[in-house]
Image 1: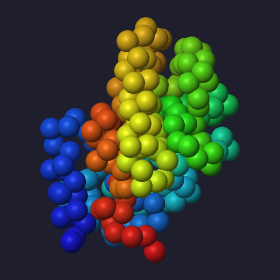
Image 2 (image 1 turned 60 degrees about the vertical axis):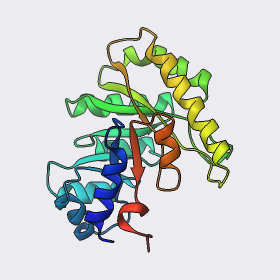
Image 3 (image 1 turned 180 degrees about the vertical axis):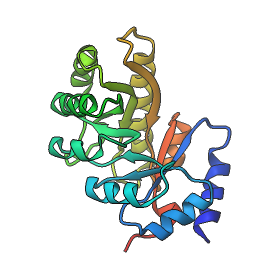
Length: 220
């Protein structure tokens, strides 16, 4: 199967679901990304800032780059000029830095707040209390636009557990959509699901799936 075939297959699964495909291009060479680009793909996800910056410089400028990995505050300045969406915002300290760099670059930076839904301690994210407390403060950061939530399920074969975690996040997302927040919060996107579990995420109402292996094949 070619990258083009893989993208077309995924698109047919996603069509009618109001769900966008983020092609996870981390560690992939530029020629493979260009194959996906030529198949019409424009949204790409990276988890290393330096790698993403290099690709942004080298590849077509209409690509929308999504930061999907854990982001350290000292790296924000490198992606602030061009990043389309940061999926992995998990602290007030990070929001403060994104706001500062947004101000320097005179652009509002779109973000998703990452919620810890997995049973694994190694996963990053806010708990429900931290999330709500952070949302109350977003008004203080005019160069940040919160567009929704992101979550990563436990890496397991237990489909019921994955479904439970995604359903919990969807319920939280729906509850927050009903609330009145400041104008720089717009609960529109729910980023959940990767190659291993995106069918369950779709079933649970994901609006963005982050898929790498099912497009590019196993990473080296």
